[in-house]
Image (tube, rainbow, N blue to C red; front, side, top):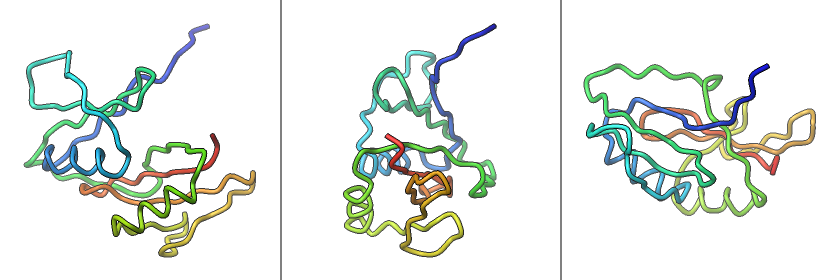
Length: 127
């Protein structure tokens, strides 16, 4: 049987600089060296060896829907929601109700918002 650990998320983005700025501002991710190539792909760190790779594709069509998202957990969801409000970033519950959180059947509270390319991000309190 194989065992796995999470390594990275890779997203195609229209403007890599805009995306770097967004993820640094909203999630406070630190940019790290792209050790894989000399390409214009830029890497950010979630910590503990987990990474977000932003791959520039300025001429590609990016199609997204809310079911395709990545989720991060925080110990203080309310504080994070307040930071979204301060940054004037719209968020919603799973059903799309603006500025509303959602409590799942298992009691986990979550919110959703989008990055500049339309990718959905879930933040929850399953920490």
